[in-house]
Amino acid sequence: MKIAVILLCCAVTLTWGVAVKQNRKFPDDFIFGTSTASYQIEGGWNEGGKSENIWDYLTHTNAAAIEDQSSGDIACDSYHKYERDVEMMRELGIDSYRFSMAWSRILPNGFADYVNEEGVAYYNKLIDEILKYNIEPMVTLYHWDLPQKLQEMGGWLNPLIADWFADYARVVFDRFGDRVKYFITFNEGAQICYEGYDSVTKAPRLNMSGIGEYICAKNLALAHAKAYHIYNDDFKPTQGGLCGYTIAAGSNVPLTNSEEDAYAAELVNQLQWGLYTDPIFSKDGGFPKELFELVAKKSAAQGYPRSRLTDFTEEEKAYIRGTSDFFGVNHYTGGLVSASLYTPSSVVPSPKDDIEVGQMALDEWPQGASFWLKQMPNSIYIVLKNIQKRYGDVPIYITENGWSTHEGIEDEGRIAYYRAALESALDALDEGINLKGYYAWSLMDNFEWMAGYTERFGLYEVNFEDPERTRTPRKSAFIYKQIIKTRTIDHEYEPESYVMTIDEGH
Ligand SMILES: C[C@H]1O[C@@H](Oc2ccc([N+](=O)[O-])cc2)[C@H](O)[C@@H](O)[C@H]1O
Image 1 (tube, rainbow, N blue to C red):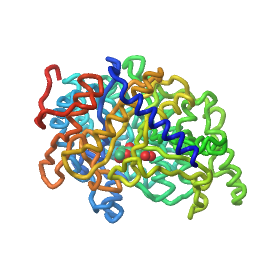
Image 2 (cartoon, rainbow, N blue to C red):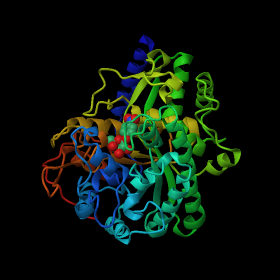
Image 3 (tube, rainbow, N blue to C red):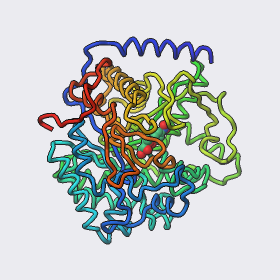
């Protein structure tokens, strides 16, 4: 443990050494953006023909599950205020805006038998408004808001959902692909599967510990591949865009330089994201080998007649392998990893119990407003290196990265976080990592899932008490704007005033 701390300190010193490197610039074609998600910002939960999704259902039937008993019924009201959102994008000068579409707004039945033209019209208006100002839309097809009707049929545990999702994807490509050139099928497999179907965390909050995540992971991979093949075969030849996949990855660093801790960090990477991305990006396809073998071994010892993680057929492996044009990574935090830090799960079986590894953060790392969010030094560099090591020179987009505070315009913590994160991204670019873009989470405060409105991630503060949902730029918005404009990180830069304007050409 001492060794790791010493090593880490050296890395930090080194990182800070690199951080003060002068005259570093992001490439001219590097994409700077911001991210949001439909349920977190749109509101209009029952307007314009939209049906109920699993977050509507959860917040309406179990308000106590959300820290402040709130919901996304109105959220930022972007359903009505999207023009102001685009104005904010112009103020910041971003190159691209990542947002998600609500399946239940486009296909209220969940199935593609009926397309809700009012829902399609909403996204058309948003896309056209974005494009009017030369901002590139990046569309996530699924950011956690499954139509409730499909959940009642098993949701991501029902293998038929791969076809239901593929049908939805076809509608999205068909209706929007003439203007949208970046599609992401899924936001964060582990959060959909582990948090939704395994650990009673996020909607639909099912408790199928040690089983739910693995069933869901397999269905998700097949759903993604089907959607990708549809895009690749039927739309890409005429539309010419890209279709990718996004996971959440932490920077998982071995606690010591022992082989055991290196193996522990590998297992965490396999469970946290390799379970979702190895089938798509690895050379041989299929689930990560060590994780797959561990689950099989544990399942047998627990008396299961077959592994809780069911393998793909060889045909399925080949069908899924290679189905992504880029690697999307949401990155927030990291930790030191070791089997010696494992505390036995209270629930067995569980994915965490399958790998028997624990994690820790250091006290000196700054703490965000979210309990899980610590600012680990050089975190982005570490995670990008891990991805490159695993999958080679795949083009990478950081599709989310951000810091939570409480209310207030003065957000020095967020500024320090973004500056450090972007220095770390520059370190990665210096080493030739194929990083194409960076999307700050988030354009504005929004419904932060189980934390409701108690944690704020926005470059713009949103007043949720005000029916107008007024948006006000935080200090960090001015800093991010300056970074985008100059393509450099000036650590001394202070905004002259907090009056936001739109620069010429935006
Ligand atoms: C704040 C945003 O959080 C995103 O999700 C994750 C997932 C995993 C981690 N992690 O540290 O392991 C952090 C954030 C989510 O995609 C987005 O919607 C926001 O809520």
